[in-house]
Amino acid sequence: MTDKTEKTGRTVVKGTQKMTPSEAFVETLVANDVTDIFGIMGSAFMDAMDIFAPAGIRLVPVVHEQGAGHMADGYSRVSGRHGVVVGQNGPGISNCVTAVAAAYWAHSPVVVVTPEAGTMGMGLGGFQEANQLPMFQEFTKYQAHVNNPKRMAELTARAFDRAMSEIGPTQVNIPRDHFYGEIEAEIAQPQRLDRGPGGERSLDEAAALLATAKFPVIISGGGVVMADGVEECKALAERLGAPVVNSYLHNDSFPASHPQWCGPLGYQGSKAAMKLISQADVVVALGSRLGPFGTLPQHGLDYWPKDAKIIQIDADHKMLGLVKKISVGICGDAKAAATALTRRLEGRTLACDATTQDRAATMAAEKEAWEKELDEWTHERDDYSLDVITESEQEEGNWLHPRQVLRELEKAMPADVMVSTDIGNINSVANSYLRFERPRSFLAPMSFGNCGYALPTVIGAKAAQPERPAISYAGDGAWAMSMGEILTCVRHDIPVTAVVFHNRQWGAEKKNQVDFYGRRFVAAELDHQNFAGIAQAMGAEGVVVEKLEEVGPALKRAVDAQMNDGRTTVIEIMCTRELGDPFRRDALSKPVRFLDKYRDYV
Ligand SMILES: Cc1ncc(C[n+]2csc(CCOP(=O)(O)OP(=O)(O)O)c2C)c(N)n1
Ligand SMILES: [Mg+2]
Image 1 (cartoon, rainbow, N blue to C red):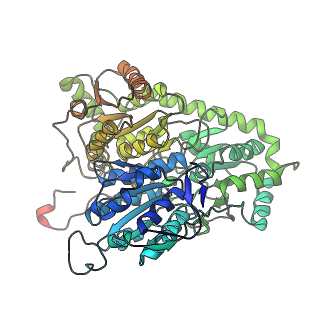
Image 2 (image 1 turned 90 degrees about the vertical axis):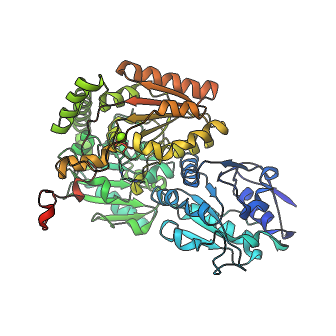
Image 3 (image 1 turned 180 degrees about the vertical axis):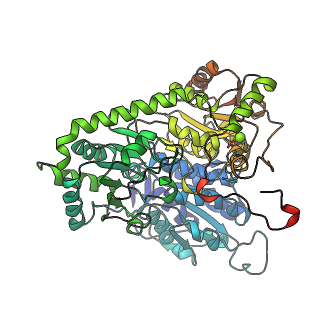
């Protein structure tokens, strides 16, 4: 007896049957609509791998397993389906740790399949032996260990269910000998939560509070994206006439063309968003954990409204009130909760109704002022940046100001684009210039903040949605960590467009040496770089851009090559060494030295 799966319509065996554990594993993947896995092959799971093709599963071989983990992350973030990563026991698995940590903080339903050394050898110090559960303990919502081959189907299914219900990575750890043998197994139907809006009492309290609010502001968070709740967020915002700001690095959580969209909070975010939220008497944090890094003062503005009442809605009750003191906590799905709140406000007169037009005018004015400021903010104006701009004019030719480059890229963005960004100074400044019309479009490294994130993640996104243009941003340092995956694009026909900001330095960290360590640069410079040449050697297009007017056309040509010819392009943009505001002003202080030999190092 067989049955069809929900999304991909493939058949899965039904009822209890004799099969091998490999078959039980692969059929469970099919039952969970898995069509793509990222990883590098290995003997540890070869018996299962052998039947991937007849099961309708493609294994995308990558350059490095960290890339595979990021691809699984990007794949799941744009598709809402599981991302799956696999590797050889030991080193193939330890290579995945950073990527799984990043997926954890992005709340991505990634399943990391970790074949382990055989049960008869564990503990003897054999080949590629490692204890693989502790490695991922910090970064997974659930860890299954297949302690008996007969439990392969059950435990694999649970890992897939929990990745969705817990909204984060899970692990299925499989001793390699447990793929073999003969078992009786039944393939479980996937169990998906039917999520609700939260408790009646908290929803009633939230509605009562909103009814009295004079200047409500909505923070649209990642939970809105994951719940596919943008329309519902819009309906609530429109009923309230409230400004909507994006939580940090969730710029795709509200359409940028909407008059109530005011831009992102957080590092290098929108001043309009910050000035508006500073006036709030009630903040609705819809699908946001209010992560501490995302609400730090920016642009010299300590904007967080300390006296405002906060209504926080999160699918994970443990996030409620964790970072900010709240008045009402709703444990619910962002989409369902927004609908429930809008319904409760229907037909009611709200305190803010009297000022809807005034508030709309305030929003429009703040947004206009910020756009004007961005237009005029063509380069950084701190002493260090002015010095290196002068240097660059005298010595190196007229290289480009990152902010101007970012504005040109913004203007040339294709419709329906997916953009991934990396960690770095220029990538952070990009926050003000990345706007989206639909959710599941923006892929940033979120709270784990690892360099080397953007390229592999966008490759995974492109694999999931080949019909959409895929663009990554990375600084030259972060790029070099990850650029090998261009080979994956070329080898496996997953074309993307990669923008590299060539500023010859690990800029973001160097900025701390500028601000706190008297410009004593240690390990900050990068040279011998020719990224366009390296791209060409890997079989992609490589383009160097040195003139501002070439930025937009270069991006458009590359996207055209991606969409129409299946070609990957690396666009290397030559930038000055100027640097925007630092990442961690909050976490650094001027050095203190007690020992005589270091006395000048202050
Ligand atoms: C894996 C990892 N290593 C180191 C860091 C620390 N770090 C953060 S930003 C940065 C510099 C990035 O330089 P680059 O990619 O060239 O971008 P730029 O800042 O120059 O724009 C470094 C080293 C990190 N975040 N992640
Ligand atoms: Mg750099």
